[in-house]
Amino acid sequence: MNFTNTKMILAISAIASACLLACPSAAQQETETQTASGSNTDLSFKIHLGLENSFKAGLDQGGDLSIFRIRAGVTGETSLSQETDLTVSLDYGVDLYNFDGTTGFGGVDPWEDIHTFGIAAIFTTDMSNDWKVFGGPVFQFAREDNADLDESFIGGGVIGATYKVDSDLTVGGGFGIVSQIEDDARLFPIFVLNWQIRDDLVLTSNTSGGATGKSGIELVYDIGGGWEAGIGGYFEFNRFRLDDEGIAPNGVGEETRIPIQARLSCELGDYVDLDFFAGFNLTSEVELADTRGLVLGNDDLDGAALVGVMFSLSF
Image 1: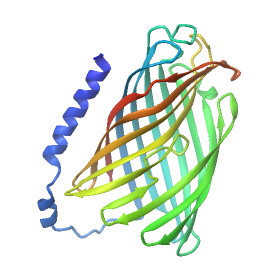
Image 2: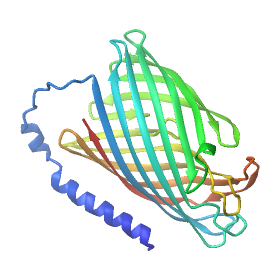
Image 3: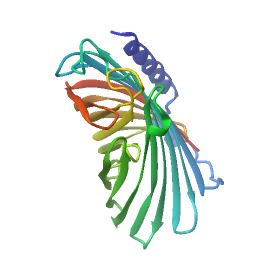
Image 4: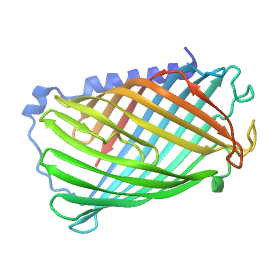
């Protein structure tokens, strides 16, 4: 086991112990008296911090790859009018790529640490009792350490609508279009689903992803006593500018993957949540391009296990 994996497992073990000690039991929750809410519900925030480790897996053309991911962000929501809400999200991520052995990219490591900063401002307007429309701009900077910031920009927007079929089912869809680093603009679909199958079971498209990178679906079961479990999957895409060294100076890297994972979540009081998840990357691909976007090589990654933890604070 390498040092990164050891750190990840120790961090998850420590937080898991805290969760087991702090999560209230079902009996405790049933006897607790709800405090009357006098807070202003027109403005709310959510802060999250997450760690994920994708364990070492083989590249088809040679070498191995493991990835340690750190995610942090804040989301704020406010009412602009009786009909319109605004949600603004700021997200920052670091992906620590650890290529090992002789890779198919000229026998060397194509990149190392990738930093991604994103911002989105999404407006949602009630058109009727059942229909809502949403849309707004999304922006992102994605680059390797020391890569040019002004050459790492991605920008565009999203638009769509949702329809409330009944009290238990909301469906919707739309699309987004964003520019790409040294490539044509990327058009991607948006799928919205919230189906309350029964009181303790919901099928949802809300997988806590950024507007430009992640979409999926999850089946969530309310265990009770502040605990819930979920299982689902999503698609993730990331394209980023490289530094001026290595096999492709000022070039472009890209990663796509489709993970499936199981999640166990714990409520620590009214405002704090802890999510533990483990899963498997069904398919992953990495690609390397030069400074003009000409593909120099790509490689598929064997299936790899993943494990992680997410901390969220709402207020």
